[in-house]
Length: 106
Image (cartoon, rainbow, N blue to C red):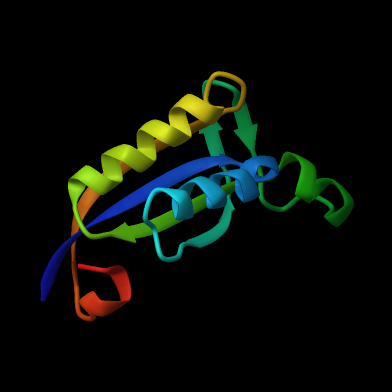
C-alpha cells in the first residue's frame, strides 16, 4: 500500500467542467464524479429530479487522488478561490492508501 491524499469537492454540476480544468492544471491525473444530494446552508438538493431539470440544479461529488497533501492543498485553494464565492460547495481532504501508485504519480 502507498500513502496518497484524496480530495473531495461537493458542488454544483454547472461548474464541473471548470473544476476539472483546475484539477488537471494543478497536477491531478484524473477524477471521478457522481450525482450528489443533500441539505446545506443553501437548501436541499435532490438527485431524483426530472431529467430536464437535473442538469441545471444537480450537485456533484468529485473525488480526486493526488500524491500528497501539498498538491491537495494547492488544488483545493484554487477551487475555493475560483468558485466558492459565487457557487455552493465544500471541499475536504483525507489520507488514503492506494495499490497502484503509478496511476497517481506517487
